[in-house]
Length: 359
Ligand SMILES: Cc1ncc(COP(=O)(O)O)c(C=O)c1O
Image (cartoon, rainbow, N blue to C red; front, side, top):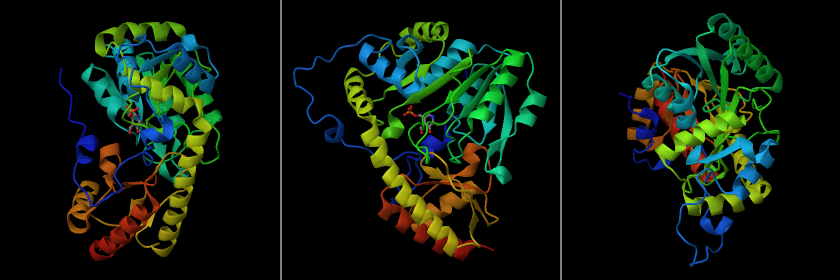
């Protein structure tokens, strides 16, 4: 089996003086969540589907039963397990574009025919359900989307999610919603997820709450799907990180506090971003992100987005992520979850660069 390198994740490893390339929020410190891990904590596997306590906390967030939850090593493993469980060679797999490309690369590797449906930029990156309806058929196994969307920050409404699930039901397809950005919605309400649809599958994690290193995520789905993914997990990682599980339990039990902290960072940066856009109307066009920790402006320049990002890094020391790594050219993903000072400095330098190279 062959898989293409994950260009975005390799790009993010480049060294940068000012890093605006990522998609998350400034990270919490261990002491913010677990002031002290007792030194006699045994370093053992826990239950391979997750502790009762953690599954209960996730179930509570989604208003489902614990039986509908499987704990995984991040959203990354959750997405892998869903694909390993549901994809066989030759099935069709529809993905929204733009999106974070991890899941689609796996689908392609497993032999699925990966096809796009688009988010319409002129309509605030809303999904083109007409396009989806025209393209899907009985061979369609999965319809995949991120909600909130990475990179645009668009949030699909409940009505759109309902309509999308009805289309999926007509052809017997699963709807897989990557919900890694839950808790980052500007209006404070969880973005729509397909838990009401019997073939709806949700994946997520604590990473975008500010804790990437514990590597704790989940799948929320019908019990039968959870059981099948759990069978698969016995062969992938067997167990997620046991110490990470303890951290995740504390974090989710006090979720409101961390969401409040993250949203304060986000809001201050949205204000900085909007002010910069106002001062530089000739450089970018953009929409207001309703969720997530990134903005995704279209820039006015003839450089392709990878070339643009490489030159910006080399000439100004600022890292942003190129739009072509999300399937859309002439856009940049800029992190608004970082420290305010970093964003301010980065935008100043980006503005200087753009004025120099805009032709
Ligand atoms: C939409 C989305 N899904 C999944 C992931 C992977 O996250 P993790 O495995 O840390 O939960 C990311 C990370 O940036 C993401 O943005």
